[in-house]
Image (cartoon, rainbow, N blue to C red; front, top):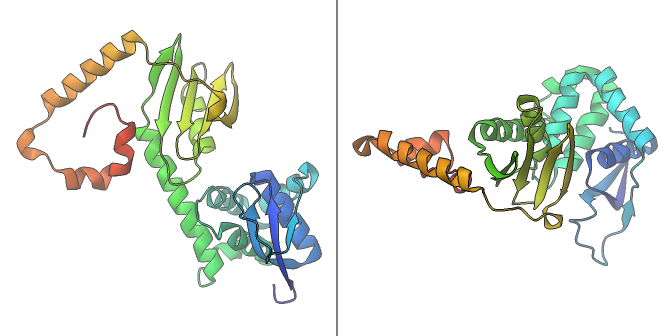
Length: 252
């Protein structure tokens, strides 16, 4: 990227993965590297920054998506998607450099861990994938209606979509809602269709009477089998971080 032009601008996009891929297309086509990249919804405008909003274009994003898989490989596509879900502030710039270098040298970019932006992409991917994997086992569904189940989560990263897809594959005929309370987003699955919506648009009903009975039975069972003398909170937190306990039915 030595022949790229550095521009004193902040590039803004709509915050979606397709919007970000559109931005990648425009940067690669013009060989420009912006001062900063940010989602329009989270960016704090000030009179010092020169901003440019990149409008999402499905044709451009599809070309970049196909180009990543063809020229860099499926692994790079996987790395890009999970790193994009990270909550780290510099993720967009790191991913821009990672992908544009990858278009030049191919899959070998994944081995260039001495490059700071490649190392950061791998680290972000690892953290997001790890948190998603952890919540696949910790997430607790509760019945809130007629065959409708609800679960709340408080993840560090924006892993709502891959987590939702995991449970679609596990329960393809079951309607459910997964609520990310940090970002106030809900993953809705109904009649084999899903969408992600703002949680303020929904009114989550209270849990059913039958669900309350089962929760009480589970808590009783959990306390009954526990051995008080062998309780080890530090060991529990190694396998199940305390920040996730608020979404559990039982009390660790």
